Image (cartoon, rainbow, N blue to C red):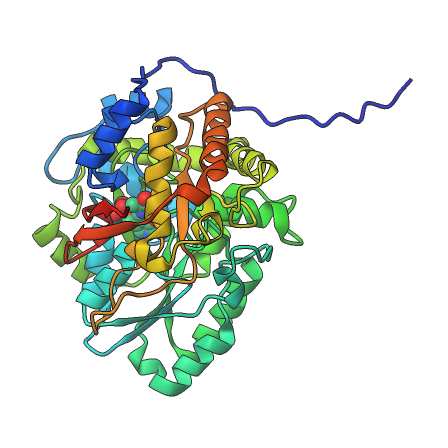
Amino acid sequence: MKKNILKRSWAEPYKIKMVELLKVTSKQQRVKALKEAGFNTFLLRSEDVYIDLLTDSGTSAMSDRQWSAFMTGDEAYAGSKSYYALEQTIQEYYGYKYIVPTHQGRAAENILSQILIKKGDIVPGNMYFTTTRLHQELAGGQFKDIIIDEAHDPYNEHPFKGNIDLDKLDALVKKYGAKKIPYISIATNVNMAGGQPISMQNLKELRSYTKKNGIRIIHDMTRVAENAYFIQQREKGYANMSVKDIVLQICKLTDGATMSAKKDALVNIGGFMATNEWDIFEEARNLVVVYEGLHTYGGLAGRDMEAIAVGIKESVNDDHQKARIGQVEYLGNRMMNLGIPIVKPIGGHGVFIDAKAFLPHLSQDVFPAQTLAAELYVDSGVRTMERGIISAGRKANGQHHYPKLELVRLTIPRRVYTQAHMDVVAESTAIVYDKRHSIKGLEMIYEPKYLRFFQARFKKLT
Ligand code: F0G
């Protein structure tokens, strides 16, 4: 008998119970909508969008179990049982001792930055994230990038581009002294690098270095389960360990965390701050009352906390991650086969197009990634976002940051779109790629003070 050598494909470990109908628009309608949105995909109305790959944040589909949990939410102002359910889940799955819920990730970043950072402090981290760095700066700190150089090269196929360069860290510690460094800011599955993981080995080395020098590790655990899946697939010694166990092991190597539950944890809103230190917890409970709400709800409804608790459990399921990342890889591979320049390896939460290579005739000053996101929308109604010079913002001296990576992010919501949607997305990028030489850049005509990428407006260059 002939040996069957066909591979077995992944498929979703769920079926669809309810669908959300989409509006299909004409090109003429999209040209008009984009102009009204100032060529910024953040300013489009979502009903004018066909396939929404703006973000994986708060856009995932909840399961039947999460919706059922909604009905069990305890909406008591104080001491809600839903808070205790969330606390217990976080302690069990992530291992942190003390928890303060917040309405989303940046609220946790605000509180933690205010507690730990003093004016003049240095916060090293594995590449910046927009809101995280802003809160570090608003608290008086200065972010320093200590990610490995490979992370800044879109084509370097290093399996762990989220790794820390310990020499860069050591140079900072020698220059400023450990006392000026309240913590190292570690993101799992680094968003701005293209959804790239940090290895367990690197994290262990960082842990022993920081122990020696008395510095904390604070974990941005927004996409920790996706990082854990990559460790399982790529790192020696982890092939037989579950995503659940790897997640817990990662968290145990750190001292506290901020979390946007809107990603990994499969909910539309929510987050938390976690710490293993009583003093930090006590101060966080003081601050959360000022900014969010009582410490047992932190800006969330009881039902939200129930849904997060269920979502955390679903997020560490191996089959879930295999299908989730499998879908991202499916899109990435299709785009690569069509010749589109994308960041390699393919990331965990999206495919990132290298806009500098896609539009080599445009300088970074005319915003190639912003331009490309606008063109993709006009072609097919697919909404993506810029992750380049606009997202990077300005330095203290008013000059633009010029990041090496000028990317368009096609972010895949979890459990929302089908493989056929992914085909349309890939085909649309190929059509835009074919006419790339005729594409001109943009000029910024309105720039907000903070996080400008959200609300900036542009005009087409002719
Ligand atoms: N950290 C990371 C790594 C993130 O990706 C985000 C949000 C946050 C923190 C902030 O969390 O939005 O709940 O306040 N990222 C979204 C995105 C906005 O589209 O990448 P939040």
